[in-house]
Length: 531
Ligand code: F6P
Image 1 (cartoon, rainbow, N blue to C red):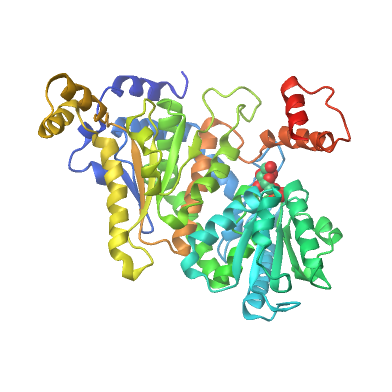
Image 2 (cartoon, helix red, strand yellow):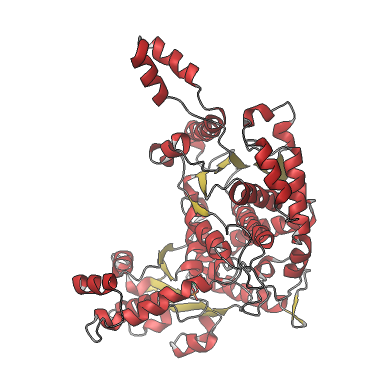
């Protein structure tokens, strides 16, 4: 019998019921998980005890515990690339030992972290200077995992900024680098070229542009460049002093890399001590993930709720809705983390997946989204499971009333999704407005909310470096658990290659150096229009 059968059966039996009917006195506590001060409430989903038990069994029979042990011990679980998956090593504690090919990798991780911290301190204190004086601005040039993590985290931790201003350039669109460099002083700007491979065309093109921009004003532009990469030979060839090159190993995937030197811009912005707190938050979540029983394990339950909604209930997307403006880039960050990791159509053995791959992930901060796309979430014909995030406290003591309004909105949206508004309630509202007969009926139907729409809430005290570390590690492990259950390799990304190859081939065509022979009619016509 398929490992999915019991869950399919429970879904078919229960799909007509209302989530509200599941609530008894204990449900909110019973259907939530805590970890180091953080609460994950999944009581507003159509999961009952039997369903949860079946989900936990699914995780067990899929080998989540065994694969988790394999990952943490440095086994090469990324087996289409023959690599270990050890982003957890970047935040491991002082006592930890993790071996790859028999060699403990942590002494080198600690050495590089110390080198990054020393450089960050020098930049922050003015010991490292630009050719026009103290560094005022840092420009991180990278894309994907070499951009989204540090950019998201730098915004998230804005209240802790006490270093130079940090900017992020990712898009090959010249408008991006143009707009960022405009207004900066090349003599006091530090450029960090962040690229695991140091071959990514967007990043290298932007790095060349930044170098030219700097060369117009400073004698030795390379002296104001630093690099973060696994490809030390290429960074040297690029002319960056090895003393300012911070390496990492191929067992760190790009989208999992912000814990190491890819986080350098963040470290410069908030300081190495705050960065350590961020690592400690990730480490606390690792510890929880490794030790808590599945039903009380936050990453496991977050993953199982995701599997329930996507693979069992058939909801193809999930919305990530942070009621925390400084997490504005979290949905974009999670798009890469989740969709590049679990957007795969074949299992590890090369066979077709038995079920759908990971969901489409999207979202925006609340309350902004409420005034944009929540209409569809509440009254559209498709169900979108919603994942809310919210803090008990903000960072603005003078604006507590605004924070309370924010929290009220978050909880109200989850409540509205759950409860909805019946036709009778809508009729009563219309009657109070004086409507009668057919017009009352017509207007009332527009004001019905079906309700019974699932959502979860991740609640935490305050968005500190520690909390951010917990949140990011939580989602990383969720992706891992979902990937194991789906039977896929979450750590390669072959699906990004074809477009890159075709873009390289099209560049000379657009430059007029090659013709459109062999191109489909649409591409050829668009080339004609655009060149
Ligand atoms: O194209 C996808 C990708 O390889 C991502 O996985 C990665 O995060 C991004 O490009 C950037 O790669 P790099 O850090 O090597 O420049």
